[in-house]
Length: 201
Image (cartoon, rainbow, N blue to C red; front, side):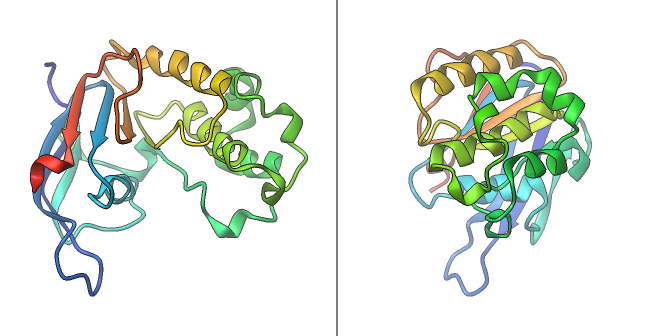
């Protein structure tokens, strides 16, 4: 395994009023490439991504990127369930989340079949198409750390295949990490690391 890019050191987090913490001094290291955080339902997969994205804050511990504190600007992650965006048109959402030049250059609109939906408000889209909007925004950013929560959920097979081809470009990469939260690893992809939250019981 190569030197870690992402390091979690003594990470602690508990939701207010919860009887037990989600994480109690979690330590982990993940190298560049494609990595998986897995575990059963309610084991903290989504919570960990939200902590890494800076949406919620740890109560103790540090999150480091290449030996320095992880900065929000280094992370690409968007919540497809954000209710504040329901009335927004897809094209406006994408323009807000990622530069139009990066999005056009990425080819993701074509690969994920989003071109026909650009003029529609988000609430008119199917669950799968809604998720593809935010997948495209995250992937087009080309950030050092990209976080995806169950990226294949509710997607059609052509879009799943397009994502797998896209994810393969992270393999062998020395300076970027794609961290996927899911129950099972993506089919056909060699993982650089795995964080199994069930093993923390």
